[in-house]
Length: 271
Image 1 (cartoon, rainbow, N blue to C red):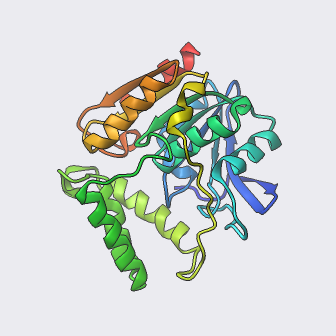
Image 2: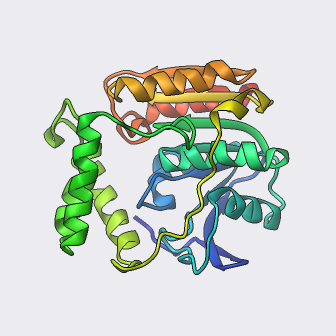
C-alpha cells in the first residue's frame, strides 16, 4: 500500500493534517476507522474518483497527521480541513470512528455537510455494551499496558470476523492491511500520552435537526445493539435509511467492496 507518497498536508491550528485529494466533481470525504489511515479506503477511492472529488484525511493522531498537543474535537479538525480546501458542503462517508466524526460534524458544522453515510457506527452517544466487545476492550488495555504491541494487533484484527467467525473466514489480506496501518498509527504514540480528544455529546436528541440525507450501511454480523442504533439514526433524521450488507461484520467496505461501492454510488448519484 502506498503510504505518504500522494498525501498533501494542511497546516492546522495544531500541526499538519494529512489528506489525499483526488478526482474532480462534488466533494466526498472518506473518514477511516480507528487506528488506521486513509489507505483503509483503497477499494473506494479509485471507484469514487472517477465521478467525484475524493478527500481522504488521516484523522489527527493517525497515519501521517500530527498528534494532538492540546484538547481537540474531530469535527473541528474536519471543519478546518474542509474550509482550508474550500471543499464544503461535502458528503461525509465514515466507518466506525469515522462514522462518529461524520455525525459529529453534521451536528456541529451543518453548513459544511451535504449528506452523511455511516457504517459500523451511529452517533458518538452509542457505545458497545455486549460481553464480546467488553472482553475485547479489556484485552486492548491489558496488551497496551504490558507494551505488547503484537498482542494488541492480534486483538485489534479480531474485529474483522467479529464474535461469530474466526479470522480464517475472511480474506487474509484484510487483517494484514489493517495490522500494517494500525502498527503505523500506534507507533506514533507513547503509553503515558494523555487522551486529548473532547467528545461531542448529547447527539441523539439533536438528530431531528439533521436536514441532509443520511444513509446507514452496516454488516449483518454486527451486534444487534449496533444495528438497532443505526436503524434509530436512520429513523430519527428527517431523510434517512438503513441498509444491511449480509454475511460481513464491521468492515463491509473491505469484505464486500463491490456491494458497498454500489450502495454508496447509488446514494451519491441520487443527491
